[in-house]
Amino acid sequence: MLVKDFMTRNPITIAPETSFSEALKLMKQNKIKRLIVMKDEKIVGIVTEKDLLYASPSKATTLNIWELHYLLSKLKIEEIMTKDVVTVNENTPIEDAARIMEEKDISGLPVVDDAGRLVGIITQTDIFKVFVEIFGTKREGTIRYTMEMPDKPGELLEVAKRIYEAGGNIISIATLFEEGKDSYLATLRVENIDHEKFVKSLDEIDVKLLYYHSN
Image (cartoon, rainbow, N blue to C red; front, side, top):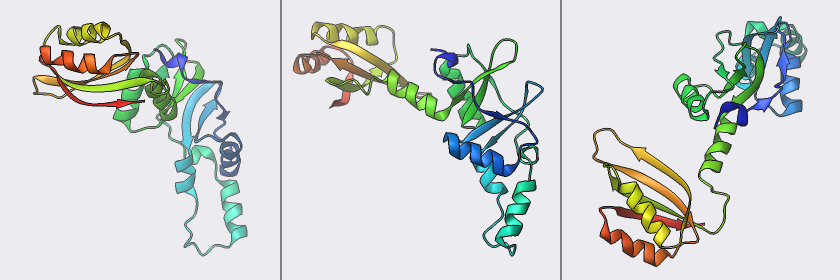
């Protein structure tokens, strides 16, 4: 799965000289939390809802409402935008985009093509949607099994074999490794399975069923 499969295409952009008020209005009208700043068809910055909030005068200010409106109308986006913009290529795997967001502590990435042209934006919300799809959480009639498994070849295959023998169909698999441990957690979402037969068959292998949940 690549970024281009989940990004929002044709994102709304603004110019550096756009006013604070105009940017805020665009965000509210389009129900978005960030705007990409463009100049001469190049990305020169990004501004978020949080940036606008921090740029707003404090409630403790002594200025009256008319003075506040005047100051904000004069404030330009180039004065508050983030200039060192982190971007991601449209052919980047979605998990790499999620890692970049986590490492950089950012909630959205402008997406560019191989020529460096803006083609979209990928956000935390998009990543969450992918997470939901991967785990098949919207699919009804499934059972979610979480197991502790030895970190050695063939164990996951043994579990898959027993799911097959119990008539089950695997919808999704996720694993979680912890450094220094000789085991890992595996979560499998399965449908159409003979639950009792499957659970009983796990006694034959070195796998510990921690818990399960029916959807």
